[in-house]
Amino acid sequence: MTEAISQPDRPAPLPGEGEATGDPRDLFSKFDPLIKQRSDLLDSGLEDPFNLVMEQVLSPVTAVCNGRETILLGTYNYMGMTFDPDVIAAGKQALSDFGSGTTGSRVLNGTYVGHKGCEAALREFYGMDHAMVFSTGYQANLGIISTIAGKGDYIVLDIDSHASIWDGCAMGNAEVVPFKHNDIDAMEKRLRRIPEGAGKLVVLEGVYSMLGDIAPLREMVAVAKKHGAMVLVDEAHSMGFIGPNGRGVAEDQGVLDEVDFVIGTFSKSVGTVGGFCVSNHPKFEIMRLVCRPYVFTASLPPSVVSTAATSIRKLMDAGNKRQHLWDNSRRLHAGLKKLGFQLGTDEPQSAIIAVIMPDLERGAGMWEALLKEGLYVNLARPPATPANMTLLRCSLCAEHSEEQVGQILTMFETAGKKTGII
Image (cartoon, rainbow, N blue to C red; front, top):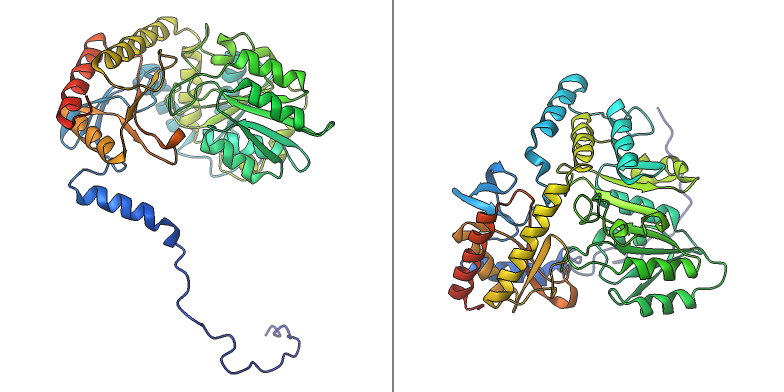
């Protein structure tokens, strides 16, 4: 029998000492305002815009929702690769050959030939020396940012950065210095104030996911390099269709070779799930041993990396699809503007078109009216949105036909008039 560990002598407790003095704080109480807001919304008779169930997916751009065939305009399936026959066949073959999962981390038993093949496809796609695949795009930002910028270093980032970027900053020990969205002068002022000799990382996004606007990367990268900073660009919403080869805004603005790290995801243009980082830094491979979200996470299933690799290689030769997606974006943006909707950008800058709503209640009403017309969009609300805006976020796909874009405009007009938005 194991002997109990002895404890040092302690004085007897005073009467009442150690007893509860009142009800413990409910750890969920911090969410009470949000709980009330959601309850009020549902009590008004509206459907829950954050709990939609797709009962059947018919194509990259159509699904059955609430028993009705619905056009999808909020899925980030920019290049429509989710139903590509070659992509599906590759996934089926890998599932049959290697089973349903790896049951291990990449640094142990979780690296299969498919993971290496996927990283090879990424290196070829970006023309870079190193590629590292993560289980999600969120983990890619979390892992890379928290690992490369540590105590004594500084991270200078756009105030509108994605939650995964902010969480990567929070996980590390670096000093975090935000600047006003897309403001080159504000970014440079922050860089000037950083102590000489400190490590500096500037984090930017090619396309910002809420309004669909792009960053002035050419100017920002030049400023960062002038001040001795490394640059990380998240191209999650631009990979696949922006740039001559679909490599993103950095390629489109001619600064890809000057960017130290490109972060991306498979859950948008690639059409599956996962994340990655590509880099030319000569010491990059050490990240496989020091990046905790990579080391301590089970690797992606073989079927997923096989579909991703196949999709990435097909995106290298997808110029016609890119052009069609741009045509769709320009047509929808111009049509919505003509109808009188307030949009997040003056001109289309990406496949995301944000329609600004007066407030959450009327935004939710417009979202439901569109769903009843047979159209699904994203309802985005504060605090996720900039400037406390409520948005209907439209994400176009290269598989949307010209006829469907016309239908979408008609649906917006009908719903907008029903709800009094226009």
